[in-house]
Amino acid sequence: MTAELISGTEISKAILEEIKVEVSEMKEKTGKVPGLVTILVGENPASVSYVTLKVKTALNLGFKEVQDNQPEDISEADLLALIDKYNNDPEINGILVQLPLPKHIDDKKVLNAIDPDKDVDAFHPVNVGRLMIGGDEVRFLPCTPAGIQELIIRSGTETSGAEVVVVGRSNIVGKPIAMMMAQKGTGANSTVTIVHTRTKDLAYHCKRADILIVAAGVPNLVKPEWIKPGSTVIDVGVNRVGKNEKTGKAILRGDVDFDKAKEIAGKITPVPGGVGPMTICMLMRNTLRSAQRAQ
Image 1 (tube, rainbow, N blue to C red):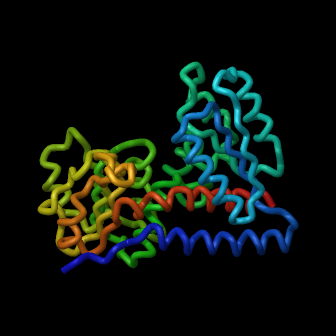
Image 2 (tube, helix red, strand yellow):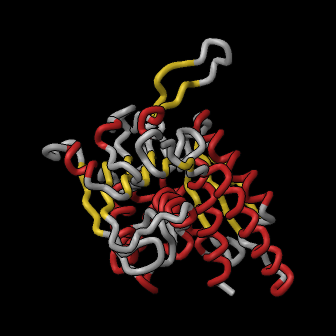
């Protein structure tokens, strides 16, 4: 049995089309579109590449997109003043500060300065707290966990009462997706276990999972014999394990041994082309929801 492939590339395309339609309807009714600002400090090549992709996606959806590039030596005070300006701009619904920031700037202070109702990355402590409470309190779901949950829902995987095992306890993926899967609601109502580097008998817990979400950042950590036959496997890991000599591009591997795992799992995400494309997609949806609430 070969597992059904859960393609984040295809699912993200479908969601972006849905967002595009909603933006068009919003413009027709109100004359306004969602506004997103991306703040880039310095010229880190990876950050430039990622911001460029965000900007391109936002413009393709019909958003108002402001790319605000700042020099590497901008002071922390000036960056905080810039954020305050966008916090008070009614045409801006989402504020993104691309990380990492230069060493002389306190990341936490900057992220905490963003208005929680414009924090479309959902990193602000207020939004983390809202996620914990759940229900109507939630303004934004953090982007990668939201993408994971969307993949699970759209793959037709039953979550209610399912045993979910999350490998990894990061603030960006592991903790929030565990909380989201345990909440009441669509794509949730699961029984959730978080495992990590100090867990005794990792294999035992993974084998119990109807839905296995792996976000450890260790290539091929999860062995095929750890996977429950017929389960849904979501591989969040993106690990550079070498370079293709012909193309010069990085060779990417997930946290799961994909080639062997796909013969055991019922459904599985590839790397690349699984969770990755969903993150920016969910960022755009958060910005749209922020704009709709502001009407």
